[in-house]
Image 1 (tube, rainbow, N blue to C red):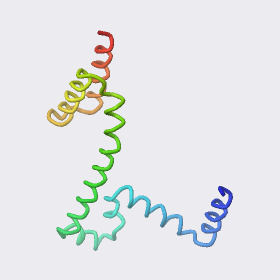
Image 2 (cartoon, rainbow, N blue to C red; image 1 turned 45 degrees about the vertical axis):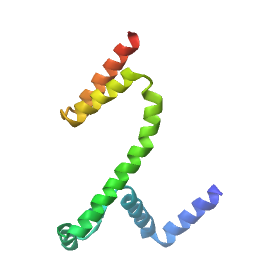
Image 3 (tube, one colour; image 1 turned 90 degrees about the horizontal axis):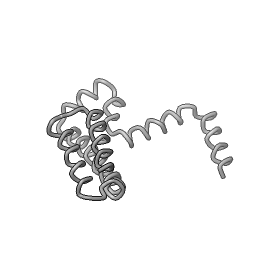
Image 4 (cartoon, rainbow, N blue to C red; image 1 turned 90 degrees about the vertical axis):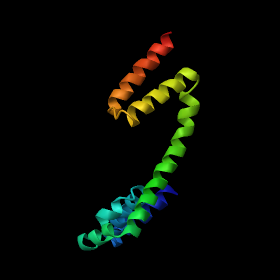
Amino acid sequence: MFEEAVTRVTTLLVRHPMACLEQQCASLRFFCPDSCYSSVPCRSGTAFRKRPMPQAAMRGANAAVVGILGAVLSGPVWTSAILNPYDFALALIGLNLLVVWKTPPWVVVLLMAASGTVLQLI
């Protein structure tokens, strides 16, 4: 089955060399909705950015992607990392550092790692 897929892709690339590029662009548009801005020619891109409806559609697509990623990542993180009230407090402190105080993420990671280590030793 794998050999058949490789043969089909090779045949496609030989017959239609731009097909691979088109497929990669489609994948990029799926996983990164903002790439639609860069794939639109400049003249229509400015018209696209000035209209409220396409802007609202892009904001909705971005919100959907963030929501899906948040839902997918929150379950495993919550079940494997938050085991007691102290872990929950550390997570809230880290979120507060990131969102409210705008602390750089690398500082928050270092602080939370050190805090988690200290809590584990106590």
